[in-house]
Length: 145
Image 1 (cartoon, rainbow, N blue to C red):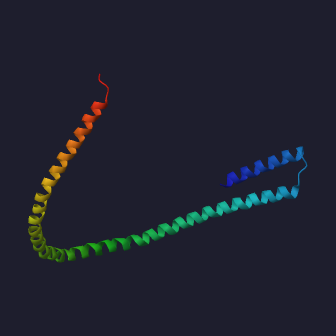
Image 2: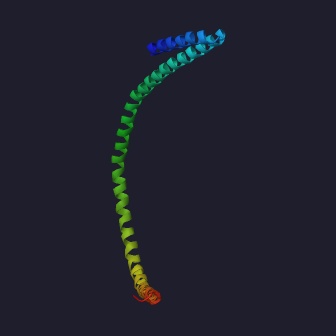
Image 3: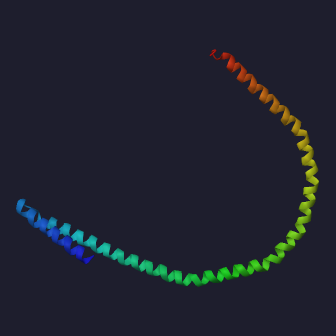
C-alpha cells in the first residue's frame, strides 16, 4: 500500500513537472489537488484499519457466542426428550377420536361419491358427444381431398 502511494506521488510529480514546462500552471491549485489526493489516500488506509478492527471484533463475538449456542442446543435437546412422553400421551388420546371421526365420515363420503358418479359419467358422455359433433362438423367444412 505504501509503495503504491509513493508510486502515485512520483507519477503525479512527473506529470506536474512535464505539464508546467508546457503550460503555465497555478501552483497553489496543484498543491491543493495533491493535498486532497493524499488526504483521500490516508482515509483509505484508515478505513482498511477499521475493517480489520471490525473483523477482529466479529471473530471475538463469534468465539463468545459459540459456547452459548452449544448450551442452547443442549437445552433444546433436553426439552425435546422431556416432551416426548407428553406428545405420545396426547397422541394416544387423540388417535381414537380421529379414528371415530373417520369411521363416521367414510359412509357419508361413500354416499356422496355414489350420488356424484352418475352425474360425472353423464357429463363425460355429453362432453364426448359434443366433441364428436364438433369434429364431424369441422370435417364437413373441409374441402374434399
